[in-house]
Image (tube, rainbow, N blue to C red; front, side, top):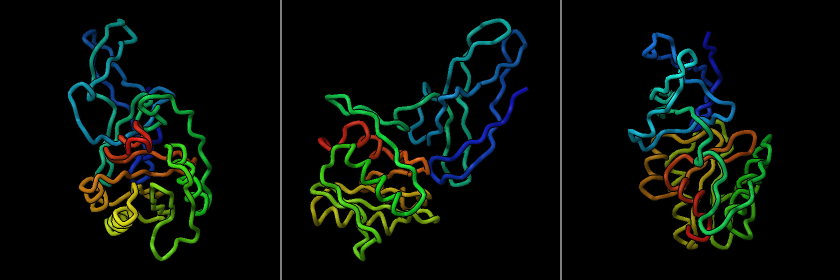
Length: 227
């Protein structure tokens, strides 16, 4: 019997119970699109026909079949897909060389969140990143020679105003603007960040930043050198 699993939305961090789907094999046996232990939930931002399907072998007859990927719609508006570990949810090697694995920093306080984000930016290749706790009136929690960062450790999603604030600071510096949030981002913030090409990351309590938009995916792949 198929068992439900607990899944956390990578955008709003809300917990859900998910029951993996079953499909009928040509032999008549049910085929379950099971989730491997290394499964990582990711938000679906760019749909393609190939990515929407997965190959699963029937446990009765052994026939391989193509079935829809395991995914669901979160109430926050994000489509969440559950599949094998994806480059968008784990540290990726920078183009032109291998980057050592990122070492997460467990988050228990707002200060931990800021420290984790600073450590992540240094890992991406931004040197000399400094933290500011408590948050200064400028709204800039992280500051380096070529980067400025916002870290929202509140329980409410980050809004468009915060995204625009850190973007404006980056224009003045000039520097790369990056935003981090524990509670995710509202629709306005995500839309504005996409317009500004500003990377958005979500922090979970294990201290592993996860990219939310395409700009964050690019920063993960390329690192600071090509940002």
